[in-house]
Length: 93
Image (spheres, one colour):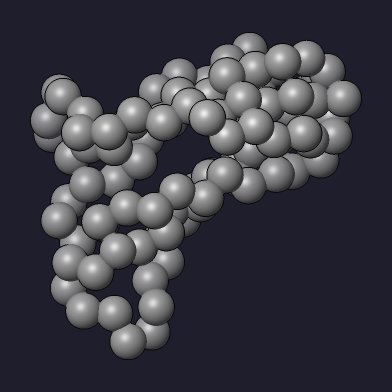
């Protein structure tokens, strides 16, 4: 599990690798109270081919001090079952 130490009110990023060309994208399962999702974006290398891995970056901010666990699921939007789950611990001070 990844652990991030962040400052309250400062934006931070969580990058996750994905195969967006296959329709799979990371989704934040639930946003805990005290964490704000500012947005997300995907990027690939300039010479990437269809189906090559991409990086999806979630931009977030902690609104208060505390310990939070973010759960991300990798799935196609139209499918109910995720093929992968990752958790990221946030320590905001």
